Length: 287
Image (tube, rainbow, N blue to C red; front, side):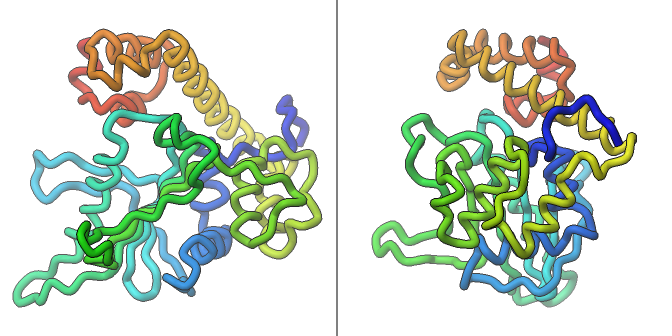
């Protein structure tokens, strides 16, 4: 189908792109291959089931968690896969908070020995945690550790964060399967054709990402998602240029209020504003 879009492939960092490629039943093999490559010898996923993405607290007043993707493998281990497009207040807090839901849902009635299945949180970040991290670490693997012995205290709770801006390899520099995944994810929308080196599972990845294969409804959904992604990036860039980001870091009320107003002017969903600023719906509505 003809479209006004200039790109050949969708942008992975849009909600539509991420969920199309990693969140659909027919593309589950793409997600499994990516996760196995990321986790290496730590895990070998044979099968995955997608779980509901909205999780409620144990009481009516508890805050709920809405995951981008939430999966479970054949061993009952849980996987939260999040796409994060921009820095936000309390991102690490939110990530840890979300990981408590798949822990709590394992509780059993009656006699129970508290044995838990592993929980993995994977964040694919379109930013770096800190400007000082630029051009440095690509993958951050986090576990509970004894600070004196530097030994892992508990190996069933893991956080993996991919700082995608730090991955800068060119096609001729790709030396591992993981390199190929990072390259494909980061550069998908900028490529005119699939590089020859990206064979095997990537044949399907690129075929599923090719916009010319989409129908009118799919293209419209992607265009809306792309507009939101671009509006968000533009808002963040504007805020950074005006020093609002520094204001948020320092907790200045005026900095937070300014960026909320900018995001509201772009008609961004209130859930995204809440996620980015750490404010409640009531606080946002009052600005």
